[in-house]
Length: 430
Image 1 (cartoon, rainbow, N blue to C red):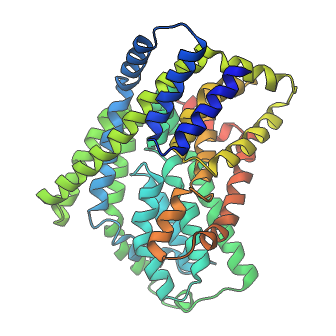
Image 2 (cartoon, rainbow, N blue to C red; image 1 turned 90 degrees about the vertical axis):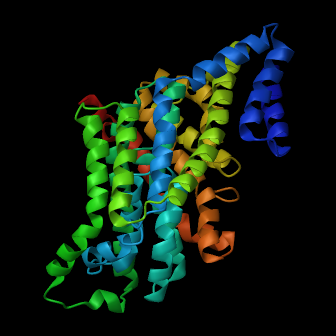
Image 3 (tube, rainbow, N blue to C red; image 1 turned 120 degrees about the vertical axis):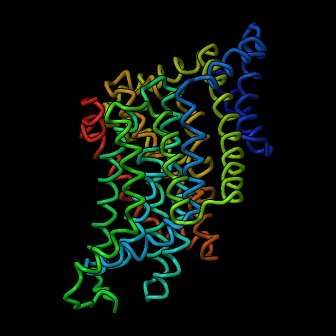
């Protein structure tokens, strides 16, 4: 019990001191091993950090980040709203669906929740408010749908989870497709039902044009770069032509070609994208290396076995264990951002869920969804701050606006637990 209490207190002290998350994780491991084990900490630290950062799967990480940085500087997002408008304006809820569908599209070629929210929101927030949509539902739907950037491949978090859990990244990407699309459909269904129940109608939705299909076809060229990039990325991976890292490199090259064709490719754009990639990748590299060391340290300290014994003594059913984990992750998500949440808890929680029959691929999807919840829970929900930057609204009002989408995600987690095939069906075909 003493190592558990000491490790938790040490982590809280380091985290609240303002230390970088990666350094805090490393400090916890060093402190725990120094206090409770007579081991060569320096050698363990060097070996585990090296092993964690030289995994071949990690090559894809900076490449996917670079692709997202380049897309952020292209014209793709600017034309997304106008391209989706003729397809959704006749649906109940109207143009609100552009938030969900736009985030789904961008998530398919991005890998970050915050980047997805920011990229789509800088266009849709202004347009939807101009057309009379209530700000609260605009903010809520954007913050909720923006979390899909973590779940739908290519996902930065799924890559990191795959490395830490020693699981196939390709299978994790496949596992995220159906849950991500199903969750997006649940968001769309909620917006439609809400519009019908509240009788929310807007002038743009009363279009009686006989040429709606002509408008839709005219909008198609705007979406063509997206379909090309998605086809290259997913087609090369699941067609057996390339590994995730090779597919990421091909996708970066394709993005550069698209930017050259549309006239947005410049030395400044590429330089800014590379600098942004270097900053993000360096931060993630520090966290991954520290997480690898902490995972080894907690095993030496016997923490996973001790906590597993305590939880096993409760004799919980698999569904009750999932319910307990959901509560724990919701509470932790109020104080920790998603990446910290994964690397801090994975060494302890992964053995628990595998012991009751869930596999690592399924748990990766589950973990990403509960981490998505952390993106929209105050006081440190990153998506909430992105929305605040776009709208200037108070954090409390944004949190209230996104609450219905938070409840949908909780319901979806239990649906996933009851029917794990939602996540495991596609990976089983590889």
